[in-house]
Figure (cartoon, rainbow, N blue to C red):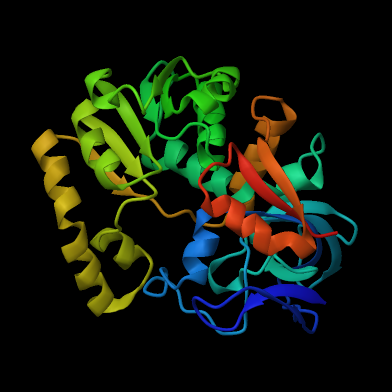
Length: 331
């Protein structure tokens, strides 16, 4: 099969001809029709995640997939050959920029019937990340107020729709180029971050969803009500994350030191802070599937690239100008 690989961190992408992936007893082999890109893909390529996850080379890139089941392991009970599925493989088993992948059956779901393979492939990572943050960590409730940063981005477009489906009041930040998009997605308050400091406009919010990190994350602590919840997917992970990920005592100590500043800011502002890292879950993808089929969430795609143009897709994503997701059509 053909696949997009890197031979070491910070090396160029290249096409490789590889053997079909092995099929474990709980695995499903999927012929990939489409995959989508996320910032984690170029961060992984550049070695920025090496403390969190160890990978072998050559490494097939890509975290999101949609395709058709072509083979199943001996103990698979949830899927059959011919099923249309979508998902995000677990841990070191990524590699969706390829013609085939073997993935644990617990990490995928049947594809929403009312969307294309390209649209379905745009959802898993951003959908799981946000669904778990909102329904679990944040426990977002109807009529609560939430600020979602970078609403026109890949994850922001999903987050706005999910928050509205949950009955929340949504404020979001964007540039003038993203105004019409986030308005169409249902944002109640739109802040042009180039003209208006968000921290001067809103206050006493129940929740903030940070997708940017840095100064934006630090300022976000000040707009929450007492015991409000700030969930970041772009900040620095702390000791709790390292312990849950089983990274060992040395890395746990390192991440604890790194996370102390966020812990101090949370205590100073009397709010709850969590760094969130999604967990693959076919069960959660099934819940998201229902929302998509009910037209409460619609995939938002900026641009679709052919498989042979994957390097161009990476370059485009890294410009930061994409409104919605960047997708690679594999088949």
